[in-house]
Length: 267
Image 1 (cartoon, rainbow, N blue to C red):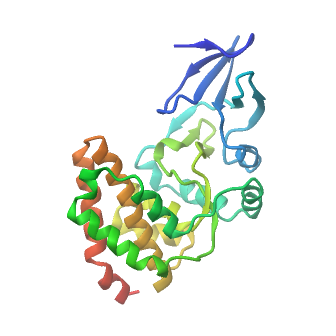
Image 2: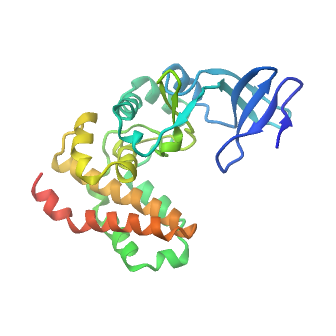
Image 3: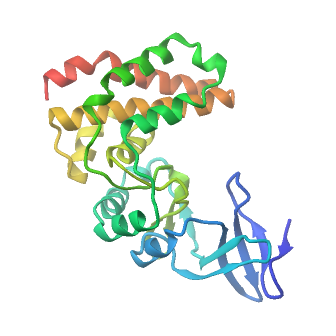
């Protein structure tokens, strides 16, 4: 399916479930177009974290389209998510003072741990909310949230998924789809990568490469946000009736929850 954007560009929907992303074609030229993308995109482009922003235009309907350079390449595999490139890219935006200032300037949201928990518990299907182990984890996170609040906040992508990492043909790695960007504890981002793509036996090594030292404080945050992100993943798969994947997340939650006191005593 395609339709005319204006007299020059024809749009072809690409990927995703939102219907907001398109490949724009004009003669032999191609661009990537996103409808109503984050105004933060310009700053990300300047930092080289996303493909180059070419222009933005407001249509008569009020929508704003952002055009970016079309990059040939591929989305990362699960195995590629373990690479140093991913670690370096995440370290880059987590430690960019410029990005933090820009996001704060345009009214970016500041999230505490309690905000993640509130966001999650506001959208629970009844049958999911009645699961005993899910309630055990939610209760534990509520009880421990005071120990992980008021940490240093950085720019966080908020949707760390392998399909949001584009490796271009020139071997440059980009991170796209910043609609969930926020100012939060960077551990919220890091644990999204860890619980999905990094074997638990390699977590220590991966965090060492990123530059996180495991102390009592950082371990508490690692544990808390790992469980929080696993709840999000479990809820998504439960709602889509992907029960095999749902059980994978449950088993990881059980491993973290059961071993939590042992781990803390050995930090």
